Length: 364
Ligand code: NAP
Ligand code: GDP
Image 1 (tube, helix red, strand yellow):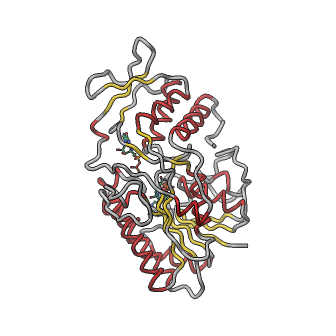
Image 2 (image 1 turned 90 degrees about the vertical axis):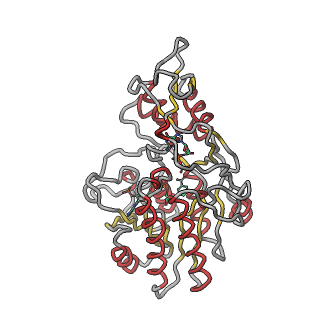
Image 3 (image 1 turned 120 degrees about the vertical axis):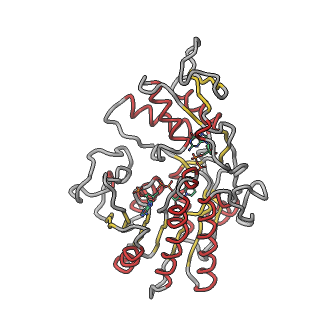
């Protein structure tokens, strides 16, 4: 039985990756940080009954993966690298999936130092800890399209130069370059997945996709009046998270370590995403410019009005981030299926199901 250590196991990707690896028969050790509220809602359904406090009965029902005693959680924190190093020695994983970190690009302007510590320096700390292991380990690093920032080519591939435009992108670029250094200098099997945005019903609520699909469900249910958004013309290459974690695993099964762009190759604007999400729950959308509309008011036609709110504009926004995943297709046979507005519809359906049928959990 293979053993995997996952940092960021309580996050969107960590939860899907855990399901994927459990289904493959892995023993999984997850690093969880201490928080004042239990932060395990995305993986509760995978934990054995009686496995400590904080288990929410029935959470995330509907997935096909049963609770497992092959999943063990350990307290640790990226800000406490001794705990991570100790854990690594204790569980001796064959594969390490490093997904933890401050993952919100917009917030990286507000908390740049934490973002760079967690996404940059902590990755270096992990690489150092793995360098000291006396057996070979395989390492997946969750890199990001944000490293391309204001890209010098479109679509971007593994050969495109990094040109980040925010602290998050800088930190991910730093960590990715260090993975190259540890691969080339110490022979470490270190891979960076250069992932474009991937979403799901488990996406954090302050990412634009989830903010939109939750609002669609809440407005439909009469529980929310307004939706304030920032740049509606921004475009993203949006895929579906469960498909991306498959590629993460595949990257660690190859003969030689490699970096791979993981992307759909298609752009979709915030406007298009919102139209698809609201339509899925039976609501028509009307966009009105800055300051022109009464926020969230339903017009005579019954349409929902979305208000553009400058508070959600960023000091700099990445543009034209669209990936060329040819290498992943050729080497892994990986190809995303759920793209852009498909993701919007799927997420809106899940949020509406939860809203309209209390007790039914958000699954996909
Ligand atoms: P997410 O839902 O925000 O999850 C982040 C995870 O990191 C959570 O488990 C969080 O724990 C944990 N974490 C944060 N700070 C930590 C710390 N100091 N110590 C220990 N754990 C910490 O992010 P995601 O969407 O799953 O993304 C996973 C990774 O892929 C991230 O590194 C992200 O930057 C990267 N990425 C994501 C995308 C995307 O579109 N999703 C695209 C490119 C790259 P809590 O649950 O306690 O907060
Ligand atoms: P990111 O690509 O990782 O930054 O993911 P986000 O979901 O946070 O943002 C995607 C895009 O949506 C960015 O270009 C944002 O500027 C844009 N956007 C527009 N309105 C909003 C909003 O209200 N919240 C967020 N988070 N992003 C918004």
